[in-house]
Length: 410
Image 1 (cartoon, rainbow, N blue to C red):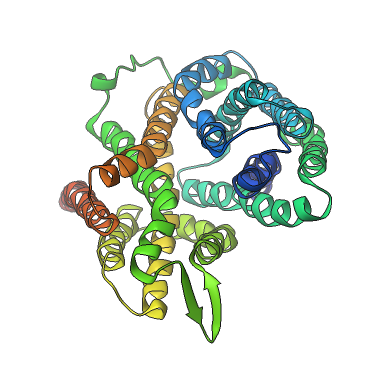
Image 2: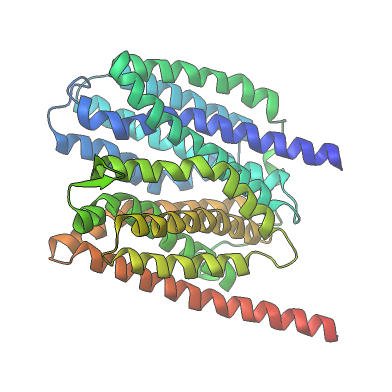
């Protein structure tokens, strides 16, 4: 039993670290490309915006194809494809030049990320049990985000020392480590092992719980990955201006927002794992999920109010911790319901809706701002969405409690 548990932890850990390695180049772009775009052969900042967002949109149509491929290939073959594509695109960032080349590179990266993300979920589905699924999902989510942290901090430092092109090539070469790790860690598994007895998977033919998880994932990706990430600097500037003074030191609001968001990636390996372990306990996932939704609703509303910078940042940190919990818990709930359905197909559908939410978050936000809505009002609307999710999931929690009482009295 201990050997089996150790094997599953090792597989999830290695796949998460491989994913982190492959994220280095993509994450580096978000801090380096807006400043070094001319080295990449780009002409203007609008091209930078297109390049950075393009991979999100290509994942929406490509995810079903990647899911179909995974149902016919061994898991480690799919993960190997993802690593190879990540290497090609990241080295390409260093040697490619011009808008058309960059569009092609970002489209290929979108395919690579689809293989990585779905592969990570499938590993958790395959190795986790009913008793440790939250722990394994927390371990995966927490560790792979180290790639975002390393790409932004390491990339931001290296581009100023060795240049943009050399940094991209270096990150691409580092990813070569991932190929032997895939073959050493992931055993040969026939694709059929992942499949449950065939269940017709139509969106409106799913159970209510499946639909709830998928739609909640979309809304949370919209709010956290899409809206919150793209608008934090705006709401801080609205409250505090372009610069703030902290303990006598003046710092730009953009730099402060980046530092604060980076803190989340520092605590995620620990906090996401802890949240997953707690959710595996006898109380289940829903109490933690409801508390996190409630904290997010209250926190987003308070963030729309002008406060002292120190109090505001404390509330922000609470909101980001709740976001870590929500991301881990909704992913774990998705793997829970997938165990009772056609697992690969349901997880593919879930990932598609996550990408739709993340892609449209910034678009809807900036559309509302262009229509004259203040960013603080958009945060208030986000708080209302969190409350709606809380109310909806509270119904599921009450039903679970009633079923538990019925079993005890039976």
